[in-house]
Image (cartoon, rainbow, N blue to C red; front, side, top):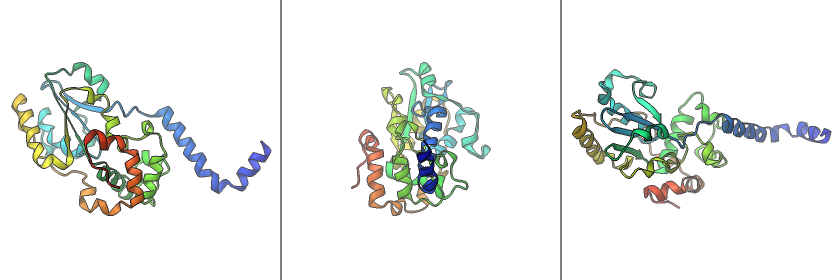
Length: 249
């Protein structure tokens, strides 16, 4: 024990980051939320449910759906802090969802989703997003080094901004009526969503804005080094398969 303490003292600058990382893993495992039981926004009076995926047009869609609770986009400044939605975990929402419901979600290309999380929560955020900081991420990390840190964490311990979409939707994908749209196709597919909701509610939901569109403000591909792309390929292998996105070597 004495020898170990002497070794630790001599090498504390080297081994301290590893002990901090282990501590973060333990804290996240003990206190973590089960993000794979993802959030669901339920509109029970209309038999409509939206399953939001962070960094996949989530904020824009929440704004557009405000008419379903009798409000308009201009009446809410911070949609992520809005408490007027019936928001609950999918396992709780599923009990009231049957085949007559319209249930939809929106997923995103794993590369641009990952870059968006990095830009919004690391590069543009001061301080760095708390869940990422707990993983050892700092403002100085490049996308490649950020990807390397994320890969070192077990998938179930990742925050929902980084958890694979296939994992977030693992329960919801069992619903035969689930409609899965892709961010890249929303310019046309959003009209289908609006028509489906209007047909069953008589309400006109809003057009789709571009709230929190960090990765769209610049060329997100410019941040992807070959190594970062390979890491993302490994982390999100199931997303590419499940949602039909092409893997780039």
